[in-house]
Length: 384
Ligand SMILES: Nc1ncnc2c1ncn2[C@@H]1O[C@H](COP(=O)(O)OP(=O)(O)O)[C@@H](O)[C@H]1O
Ligand SMILES: [Mg+2]
Image 1 (cartoon, rainbow, N blue to C red):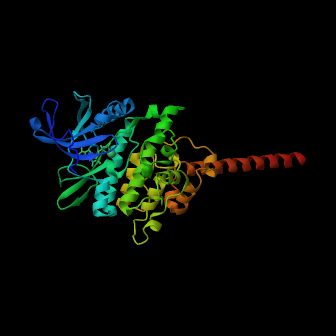
Image 2 (cartoon, protein in one colour; image 1 turned 90 degrees about the vertical axis):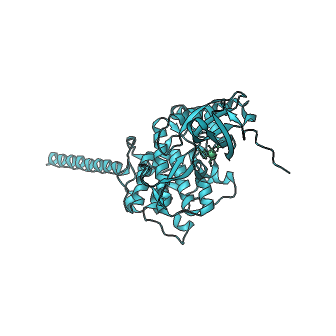
Image 3 (cartoon, helix red, strand yellow; image 1 turned 180 degrees about the vertical axis):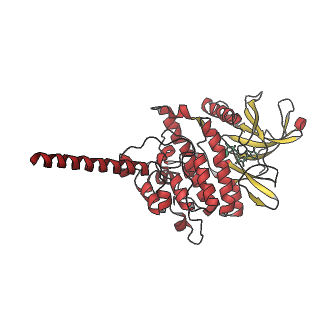
């Protein structure tokens, strides 16, 4: 039986400005088409919200939010949005730059897990793209390989660094699909039940941070967690947890330590700093991860350069003032312990506020001994 013809294919949009040629992707929210823009003599990609969803005000506002969020982003590793709006029949659309290539999921499925030298530049670039979004208060919330596009440009035609090169082409990542993106301040408003419930419903279980899986408020560190899961999958072809279904993934993200790379793929060797970096980004507690996407990117860069120590951390925001209980607690439980167990001392010793807290404690103990000594001396003198 013939498949029903997509009503958008062959259609002219916006008084002939765009001619829809073929479908290039589809997801829950809508479809993405390749289209010609004759006036500019270029191809574009047009994302259209399923007309059958046009009556769903929640989805319509999400789609609008996606368009608005993306139109504020200018990072070279974020897909460019040219325009967005509503068609005569009420369908919503976003016109973007057309990207030639495949998304990261299709790439890994087609070509198998990537070597470190190829995977890291893609993830470093994506981390850069997200850092711009985070700086503007936008958290992506749905980072997964399908939402990173892999395209190739002639060598020397761009200023992006680092890149993996192959046959005179440089491979470039483009972050797509800010469909679940939200502005941080709104997201972080405490006690918002509606947002909490949304957090439970939307997202992709395999790549979801523990806080997203629990419907908690999200900050940029949630995207850092998802990037680390993506990197893990791109390198191994497997996820950091063994689960049979979405519910199990959600549970494991919240409760279980990730399987170390060396256990997951024992026949492969990785740079020594790679696992400590991934494990840190996969900490259950956001505060135990990297401070920002930029910091995660810098750590991946250190791995790519073959370094054995992390660069100084806190590229972006300074850490909150240390609290003494930080040393003892690590209540996040198993994951935090697992991470520190597997991390070599160099990485573990760089764990943010801990050294400062230890120093403070030592100074406190020394001061207590000093006071005690003075007290004893005085008592001795008086007794004499
Ligand atoms: N600008 C683009 N150029 C080329 N392909 C694209 C573009 N945008 C999206 N795609 C393809 O369409 C797929 C779905 O797009 P996405 O924006 O992620 O929509 P959805 O919300 O349906 O997941 C992507 O995984 C990618 O393969
Ligand atoms: Mg998508």
